[in-house]
Image (cartoon, rainbow, N blue to C red; front, side, top):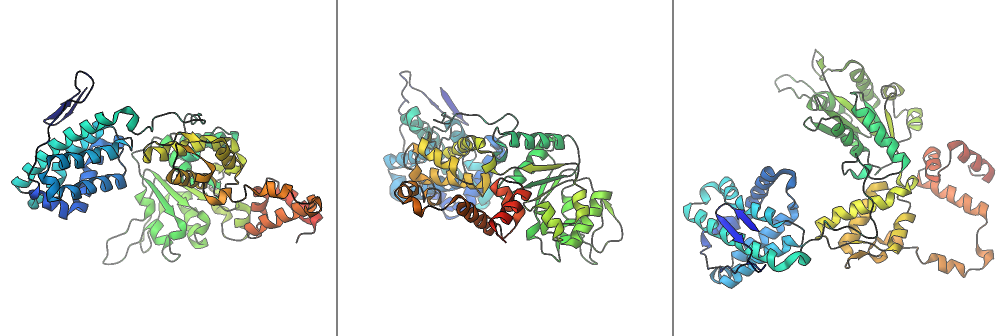
Length: 487
């Protein structure tokens, strides 16, 4: 195997070992500008790598800055620069760190190729001819030391992120495109995916409903991509973050005498998708203007005399119950009517538990890759805990739990002890309860009453959301409240 990088090459030894390459001392003192302005240099270097390598670039920003900044600081030590052995060890430490993160050697060598260009682009005059020659010599040593470090580590010592996970082994359904919110095989999720495909084939506006953390924005991006609008802009807007007195101006634009016209977010999304997160957070006045825009496909910037046409697909979302929001006046009925043809509901994770294992694998693969690929699977007991949890935060909460487990786990298998404490706090309660006297246990009616009261309290008395959480209809909940005497 031959690794090529500009003028530098390294070959495998015929017997399968890396041929020895002797590192010589290099005068690195001219590189002091790189060390002094390492933040700017590293930022420019990584930006250039991302620009050139695109989506294939696998080194996370924090890893890139952390590893290469450590290398620069080690090289700035005069003793290291004067000692071929210490210099070689410093360079190999960089390669070893990235190898264990699963970064391919070919990509690490490609990174070296842009070191000089980034220094010239960012530091300019600070990099004179002497400094550039020193950097060129350093890059030659880098390529050789990096390749030798990978060879010495061998396959066993490198990141194992491509390895299959056990005991989990179920692929994401075709068409999910890696979006976590769309990973799963449950009928409820398939209905949402099919509705997304239908929406993508048209330019109609879409309303997505579902609880917090269910993945409404992810579904909106999925529709955008399915429509073949990858090159068109996707503009997400958190309606809650728009100040009430400025929301109209931000969405539709404004024109003031003596100032350049601000086009607004609708025109910023021309030809693409405008995603309005939490529609109920917009004031009734702004909602009324939005109704007109959806009808006429025209916006009138505040302070302007004329309308401006807009070609934008609007995808809106809400985690609120629509009927309750309309009844309370938080959501205009004529606005909801504009989305009557395309409504998509993302069911909560607790109603599609068959998707949990698949999501666990998806998230485990993601975080395993970022953390060197050290974790191969989930123990059965830990999986049982994950399957039994209520996941009120839905896929987002599950994602956080897996990230926590990967971060805190010390073995090659996620165990119960690695999961967030709140998921495992009551694991020992069943054995304790088994020793209790039967007279201490609540009756079925008492247990049901307590469950309903707790659920209502959690949702602030909202009976519609409480019924959804309990898995019963609203009418059934009203019936149980009446029979149990709960006001």
